[in-house]
Image (cartoon, rainbow, N blue to C red; front, side, top):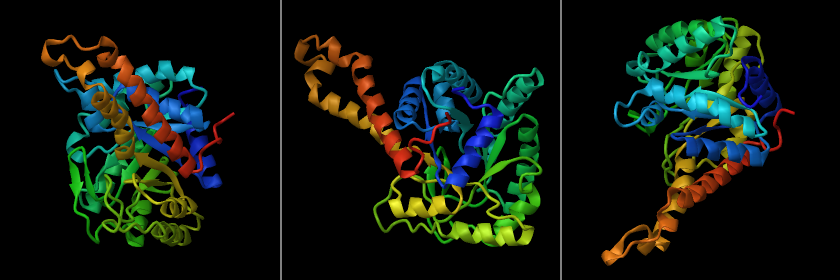
Length: 340
């Protein structure tokens, strides 16, 4: 069962929360980065999450027409085939989708999965993200209610981001300031609008100073202990212990202590993109510099096919990214936790 069924995905998340570990959610933009993520999970003996952002989907759709839905569907279908060769279970997820891209990305993908479920099949993706952090909380949650109902009907889990994550990712950007911290009131309003599971399961990307990208020490002040306040504040009001399944955005470059605190407070998923991009590209740059006169036809020479063959440097890129995925599994305590 390499691609999780809805039931298995729920089990994965439940196990992570109970065991205080989280799944690395690895952004991919090609079949090659998909294989790198799958290889990393397999080598760590960890299940995991593969995700595609709007920009990643557009890139996957090809530069001729840049269709996000085509790109996402194509890679998801590819993943359903090749993931069978890896001895782990993965869930497919779509990353950040702001309001102006819902009609060109998440809503069509929800419709595709709804059609599959109506025919007795499993959904194509196991979860989708609605990023309403640029909207007012009221508008954010109103759209979240609509999407959660559609997701639940298609046996899909929704991820919502209720307050901003700093930095920039695929055109969605927020300043790094004091607004990057979700309040208990924000969390209570979320529970009032989306429920606590009875309207459909959702993952909550709360803000505790998170920033996309990697910054030098001191530029970002993470407060993962804030998640405990959110759990307690909403839990006391609704009589439910640790009610939220949290997502850690902007996880690249975080310290081991910050990650550990987040895991203790209910994080079940942590996104990685910047670090894995670098891990993929770094071996390629090394290869190109070391084999300058082979990858280029210098001074009338013919170069070396063995060095400019994409398979040569592509294998190095895959290995580099896979290694970073295994490191993420170790940091998130998911190593060796795969479903038997």
